Image 1 (tube, helix red, strand yellow):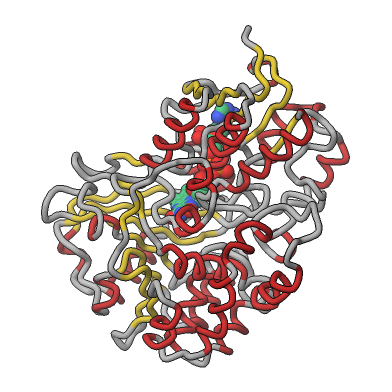
Image 2 (image 1 turned 135 degrees about the vertical axis):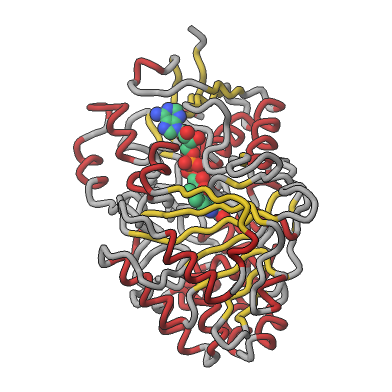
Length: 467
Ligand SMILES: Cc1cc2nc3c(=O)[nH]c(=O)nc-3n(C[C@H](O)[C@H](O)[C@H](O)COP(=O)(O)OP(=O)(O)OC[C@H]3O[C@@H](n4cnc5c(N)ncnc54)[C@H](O)[C@@H]3O)c2cc1C
């Protein structure tokens, strides 16, 4: 059997990023993927009708576009930008809007404080990317800049929403912060809002032309160019399934790694992992439509992403319901309408729609009606356009990808210290104790999303260990 420097289990964005980082340092590396195609959360398929290409998981990629990974390793993605990154409609027909420019966003939302919040973060994006999105294993090179950025992320998202002194600005910010289902009244719950909005100001909120699958395809092509390989249709269930290697990297959640590696995971590490809480579940709907969504808000009609849920107070209340283990009556819904700015997604004149909301982990309730009631609220008449619909429940997500335990798509909850220290408090959260095993998935810093940074950081840890 061939022997490698490193074997990576799982070909999600982080598994592929780890493999590319290793291969570009001259290491021999193979990626083993359970499914028939590579990509993890970056797959695109005709879920509803022929000719309608839907993103099965990830759709919109601010962190991939603004982050340094793809550029650093020469991975080319053809980004499509909507006219407006994001709209958050309110009941009066107006909407909070995220423009590329910080100043335009402040003006459009009648919130001068938006600039006070974001100017510094955007000016120092390079420092955020280099120092905040990685593990805390060395003293920062720019401690004062980091401290000033940290101050912005420290307050609860609801406190920042109030501080913005604008109904539209507050709704816009809270909707972005609510991407990770944290308690929006807790300290540090602003961090996703700060990071994703700032990434939008730096690089927009684009989708990949042709679908998220094209990001996976570009990453695989780069890996192969560097001498690495991906083998699909290889589910790894025990360590005996692996070829010999100096390092094994798992693009999996800790629970899966424990099942595969058994006693290979030290008991001290297992105890620490047992305190890593699961995130909320996800309930997703995909549609083939006969035309564009008839949003009441003209801003929503030209935005790539639309957040539904009303005022910031309503969004915070809906997310609090989910955290309390209940289904929200009026959920906060994330919507992407890629086909209005990427003409490869649907036949001429037709459209696709991608939407999901948070539900309690493992929830078995069908929440389609509550999601669709939010469409009725902000886009009356939309039902006449529906050609086909596909429902994906938390259980469907978990059977699609065992990383999505109970429908959680974040690799583990991102609350309080778990933003930076996940899945445990170790200085090097990627290495599993002092074994030859590493975690490289979104269960490690900086967490969920297609950005490849968890994988790159894990690969750097491997390179330090094996030289
Ligand atoms: C519905 C949904 C919407 C999302 N929207 C966005 C978005 O718009 N933007 C964004 O940036 N992110 C989004 N995400 C999140 C993003 O997709 C994930 O955070 C990201 O894919 C995590 O990457 P990963 O490499 O850590 O793991 P994954 O993408 O989960 O990849 C893990 C891979 O490992 C494979 N695998 C699992 N078990 C085994 C095994 N035992 N043996 C071999 N292979 C195995 C899986 O098949 C999978 O290919 C979304 C996710 C979902 C589900």
